[in-house]
Image (tube, rainbow, N blue to C red):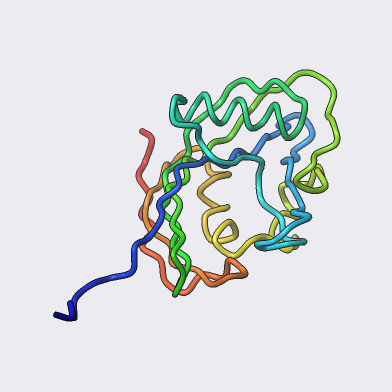
Length: 167
Protein backbone atom coordinates (compact mmCIF):
# COMPACT_ATOMS: atom_id res chain seq x y z
CA UNK A 1 0.00 0.00 0.00
CA UNK A 2 1.41 3.35 -1.06
CA UNK A 3 1.35 6.23 1.44
CA UNK A 4 0.46 9.33 -0.60
CA UNK A 5 0.97 11.71 2.29
CA UNK A 6 4.48 10.65 3.35
CA UNK A 7 6.90 13.57 3.52
CA UNK A 8 10.65 13.50 3.23
CA UNK A 9 12.37 13.33 6.61
CA UNK A 10 14.22 16.53 7.45
CA UNK A 11 17.24 16.56 9.70
CA UNK A 12 17.04 19.45 12.18
CA UNK A 13 20.35 20.76 13.50
CA UNK A 14 20.63 23.12 16.47
CA UNK A 15 23.39 25.68 16.14
CA UNK A 16 24.46 29.24 16.68
CA UNK A 17 25.96 32.19 14.91
CA UNK A 18 27.69 35.03 16.73
CA UNK A 19 28.67 38.49 15.55
CA UNK A 20 31.51 39.93 17.62
CA UNK A 21 31.17 43.71 17.73
CA UNK A 22 34.01 46.15 18.40
CA UNK A 23 31.92 49.15 19.48
CA UNK A 24 34.92 51.40 20.03
CA UNK A 25 35.98 51.06 16.37
CA UNK A 26 32.44 50.51 15.02
CA UNK A 27 33.35 47.15 13.45
CA UNK A 28 31.90 43.64 13.37
CA UNK A 29 33.87 40.43 12.85
CA UNK A 30 32.73 38.45 9.82
CA UNK A 31 33.85 35.07 8.50
CA UNK A 32 34.31 34.60 4.75
CA UNK A 33 33.57 30.89 4.32
CA UNK A 34 36.20 28.76 2.57
CA UNK A 35 33.99 25.72 1.97
CA UNK A 36 30.59 24.76 0.69
CA UNK A 37 27.84 25.38 1.26
CA UNK A 38 27.95 29.10 0.59
CA UNK A 39 31.69 29.29 -0.10
CA UNK A 40 33.17 32.82 -0.33
CA UNK A 41 30.15 34.31 1.42
CA UNK A 42 30.21 36.16 4.75
CA UNK A 43 28.56 35.19 8.02
CA UNK A 44 29.33 35.31 11.72
CA UNK A 45 31.25 32.64 13.62
CA UNK A 46 29.46 29.63 15.01
CA UNK A 47 28.36 26.11 14.35
CA UNK A 48 26.57 23.09 15.74
CA UNK A 49 25.48 22.83 19.35
CA UNK A 50 26.66 19.61 20.98
CA UNK A 51 23.97 17.48 22.68
CA UNK A 52 25.23 18.29 26.19
CA UNK A 53 25.60 22.06 25.56
CA UNK A 54 23.27 24.96 26.03
CA UNK A 55 22.99 27.29 23.01
CA UNK A 56 24.87 29.99 24.99
CA UNK A 57 27.75 27.65 25.92
CA UNK A 58 27.92 26.46 22.32
CA UNK A 59 28.21 30.07 21.12
CA UNK A 60 31.10 30.80 23.49
CA UNK A 61 32.89 27.56 22.53
CA UNK A 62 32.44 28.05 18.77
CA UNK A 63 33.63 31.68 18.96
CA UNK A 64 36.79 30.55 20.80
CA UNK A 65 37.43 27.67 18.38
CA UNK A 66 36.99 29.79 15.27
CA UNK A 67 38.64 33.04 16.40
CA UNK A 68 40.87 32.30 19.38
CA UNK A 69 39.01 35.06 21.25
CA UNK A 70 37.25 34.80 24.59
CA UNK A 71 33.97 36.63 24.11
CA UNK A 72 31.97 38.53 26.72
CA UNK A 73 28.87 40.73 26.87
CA UNK A 74 27.09 38.00 24.90
CA UNK A 75 23.56 38.99 23.97
CA UNK A 76 20.84 36.79 22.46
CA UNK A 77 19.49 38.63 19.41
CA UNK A 78 17.07 36.05 18.09
CA UNK A 79 16.23 32.54 17.04
CA UNK A 80 15.65 31.64 13.42
CA UNK A 81 14.79 28.37 11.73
CA UNK A 82 16.42 28.02 8.32
CA UNK A 83 15.13 25.51 5.79
CA UNK A 84 16.90 24.50 2.59
CA UNK A 85 14.29 24.61 -0.17
CA UNK A 86 13.89 21.18 -1.73
CA UNK A 87 16.53 19.71 0.56
CA UNK A 88 16.56 17.74 3.76
CA UNK A 89 18.34 20.31 5.92
CA UNK A 90 16.95 22.59 8.57
CA UNK A 91 18.75 24.53 11.30
CA UNK A 92 17.49 26.18 14.45
CA UNK A 93 19.99 29.02 14.83
CA UNK A 94 20.46 30.93 18.07
CA UNK A 95 21.80 34.31 16.97
CA UNK A 96 24.08 36.27 19.31
CA UNK A 97 26.23 39.35 19.46
CA UNK A 98 29.28 39.68 21.68
CA UNK A 99 30.17 43.21 22.73
CA UNK A 100 33.48 42.28 24.33
CA UNK A 101 36.42 40.03 23.65
CA UNK A 102 39.97 39.42 24.76
CA UNK A 103 42.91 37.48 23.42
CA UNK A 104 44.71 37.27 20.13
CA UNK A 105 42.78 36.43 17.00
CA UNK A 106 43.85 33.10 15.51
CA UNK A 107 43.58 31.72 11.98
CA UNK A 108 40.26 30.07 11.32
CA UNK A 109 39.99 26.72 9.53
CA UNK A 110 36.45 27.66 8.40
CA UNK A 111 37.57 30.70 6.38
CA UNK A 112 39.01 34.19 6.58
CA UNK A 113 38.13 36.41 9.54
CA UNK A 114 37.69 40.09 8.73
CA UNK A 115 36.80 43.14 10.82
CA UNK A 116 34.29 45.12 8.74
CA UNK A 117 33.00 48.64 9.37
CA UNK A 118 29.39 48.29 10.49
CA UNK A 119 28.43 50.93 7.93
CA UNK A 120 29.92 48.69 5.17
CA UNK A 121 28.41 45.35 6.20
CA UNK A 122 25.74 45.43 3.49
CA UNK A 123 28.38 45.81 0.77
CA UNK A 124 29.84 42.42 1.77
CA UNK A 125 28.74 39.24 0.01
CA UNK A 126 26.64 38.15 2.99
CA UNK A 127 24.81 34.82 2.97
CA UNK A 128 21.29 35.79 1.91
CA UNK A 129 19.51 34.85 5.12
CA UNK A 130 22.22 36.60 7.17
CA UNK A 131 21.64 39.74 5.06
CA UNK A 132 17.91 39.43 5.85
CA UNK A 133 18.44 39.38 9.64
CA UNK A 134 21.54 41.63 9.87
CA UNK A 135 19.55 44.84 10.52
CA UNK A 136 17.94 43.15 13.54
CA UNK A 137 21.26 41.73 14.73
CA UNK A 138 22.80 45.20 14.82
CA UNK A 139 19.73 46.91 16.32
CA UNK A 140 20.08 46.79 20.11
CA UNK A 141 16.42 47.70 20.65
CA UNK A 142 14.91 44.52 19.15
CA UNK A 143 15.02 40.76 19.26
CA UNK A 144 13.62 38.57 16.50
CA UNK A 145 12.43 35.11 15.58
CA UNK A 146 10.97 33.35 12.60
CA UNK A 147 11.58 31.00 9.72
CA UNK A 148 13.57 31.50 6.53
CA UNK A 149 13.38 29.21 3.51
CA UNK A 150 16.49 29.58 1.33
CA UNK A 151 18.24 28.10 -1.70
CA UNK A 152 21.68 26.44 -1.76
CA UNK A 153 23.40 29.85 -1.91
CA UNK A 154 21.48 31.13 1.11
CA UNK A 155 19.21 33.40 -0.93
CA UNK A 156 15.89 33.95 0.83
CA UNK A 157 12.91 32.44 -0.95
CA UNK A 158 10.38 33.07 1.79
CA UNK A 159 10.53 34.33 5.35
CA UNK A 160 8.38 35.08 8.36
CA UNK A 161 10.68 37.13 10.59
CA UNK A 162 9.08 39.04 13.46
CA UNK A 163 10.76 41.59 15.68
CA UNK A 164 9.97 42.42 19.29
CA UNK A 165 10.94 45.47 21.28
CA UNK A 166 13.38 44.86 24.14
CA UNK A 167 11.76 47.57 26.24
